[in-house]
Image (cartoon, rainbow, N blue to C red):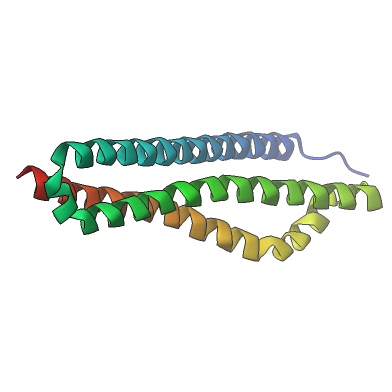
Length: 154
């Protein structure tokens, strides 16, 4: 049996190391976006409550903008929280699948597990929907809040 090519092993090691770094960056970015949407949406809700109180009667006349903004910001917050919970569940399910395959046989675990990940595809679609809902809810909520603020302050 021949020895593996050391250059090929080095290239594979570099590839896997770089790939791991990229995945770590993606995970960190995802966490940052989730925290940002939660924080900014909550802050926008607080700001809108203060603005509505300061505006008094003008706020009541323009309440449809404010209520729409609140609804969208709450959707953003709920979508973001549900996305984090769902993401955790999907990762745990992937870990369970990996463990199940490892118990069957210690060889080619990843190859066998990747084929099983197709079972999780609907879960990842839902995760994408939740992420998009959070982002769009936040952006739309802020837009409606800006219209409300402009209508009561000008």
